[in-house]
Length: 472
Ligand SMILES: Cc1cc2nc3c(=O)[nH]c(=O)nc-3n(C[C@H](O)[C@H](O)[C@H](O)COP(=O)(O)OP(=O)(O)OC[C@H]3O[C@@H](n4cnc5c(N)ncnc54)[C@H](O)[C@@H]3O)c2cc1C
Image 1: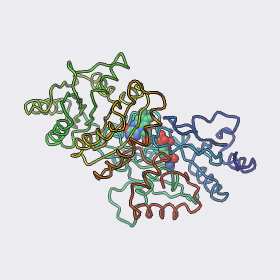
Image 2: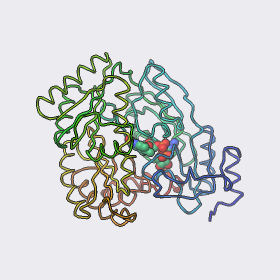
Image 3: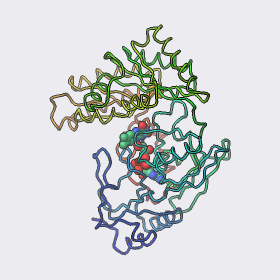
Image 4: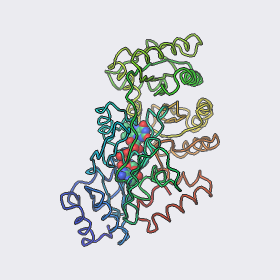
């Protein structure tokens, strides 16, 4: 039961107006359940502020009354960071109504957007001005830029443009005290003390609420060519990556790898999806080359790369998309990997990264660890090879029961994460920590690093009202 009494709830509702608050009578499940359905929280109240002043007023009241707040964007996060806990004492603050594009400046290549702008809307707005906002995730139709910034989201364009941190120039934030910090700068260079912007990026709502951001735009490529290759080993995938980077440099804007089980699952689960290659291969790579000069330039680079790779026997087969719909069909295969894996039953997931050159070694060393727990477990590893980011997922054996996930989760998680740490990697490459990996963070970070994080949290949120129970 909530300790939030009716009087206090009314004071919160007053800030946003009744039509922008969901209370007990309303269906709040969209705000309390996460997309993997592992955690489900409870809240007596969802508030939808319409501007920064309203956010500040909510936080001031929360701070004064010791009420815990859970900021929420599109609720697409994979770390259970955006849901309230089970106590019924935490209120959700959804940024969905704060969805204005405040300014777009093609000359400066910048855009000022409110936190609730859907990523796809941001991309389309930039596109309308002949600019590119490169952040690209399969959840882009529902995740919000505030959520992307708060999780420092990665996606498929990190290789060339960096992750969200690299795309943000300035922030507007409501601090845990309810003050408004206007840091919406457009500066590329700004060495004036501690970088507060960087502190809020990836903080997962634990030290303040991001209400707006200045983001970077880029020239829109004139040509984008995708190629699909079949390879015999992950070492060959790495060799292809190195060759592609040597030839195309920053023009290599995507490099994703997928296993044979992934291709089989996708083509089996989705009738309209076809393997672009004639034969079966142990591994597949989807790569994209972009050119600011022309489509022909991108095509020439792609063809030259594939020719060289074939000569060097790095790839077994390859095909280049001949038009936009083929390019999209290639990407669809990659985007459907998670959905097709879901159809194989219970799955133990790891969003990990290792130094790029160690990806083959990681896969080689992780496999016996998994199979020593369950020889029938099906390793379904795919992801952003160019960033060393592997979605190292393990599907249940074909004949396993529904409890497989629960009985094997820790047994598989532990050695996999230990290996990641031993290889100098990260236990969360792009999905964040949230509630899901809070204990794991504490186990894998050094005491010095953990204490610095906790000191920051204590200093900026002394009453622990901002998303308590998450991250640290
Ligand atoms: C199909 C699918 C594909 C995905 N692919 C990728 C991928 O390739 N790469 C990747 O990195 N992620 C991926 N994700 C995960 C997810 O989409 C990202 O983490 C995304 O950035 C979350 O944005 P959101 O608006 O949904 O945030 P939410 O899930 O609502 O929130 C995430 C965290 O940020 C906090 N938060 C949200 N908004 C604010 C704010 N304005 N101020 C302060 N804190 C805030 C929340 O409290 C929470 O801790 C994928 C998810 C799905 C469902």
